[in-house]
Length: 118
Image (cartoon, rainbow, N blue to C red; front, side, top):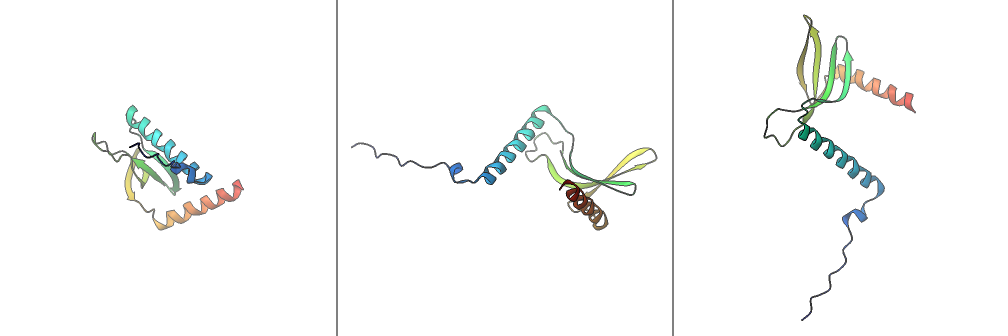
């Protein structure tokens, strides 16, 4: 008895539209960056957004926990507050959500930037 001929299956990629393929490329680029960072031992945070409110700077950043066996690094992004105190830079973890007043200022600046760019 001869084996049955296999059905030709189409690649799952063939069913994706251009937007979905571009999203996959972006994910792939991000994964390559993360792998390169891990291999090189880079332990610096990645800042996604920054907002100064008075003398306090709020940053939305991903961070590395520093554990050698962590498979989920980098963590976040989370909001952190930075300020100067007695000549030293101090910081405090804020959380996943930016305080309301700072968030309003940040969003207003983002809207103004988008309007300038268009």
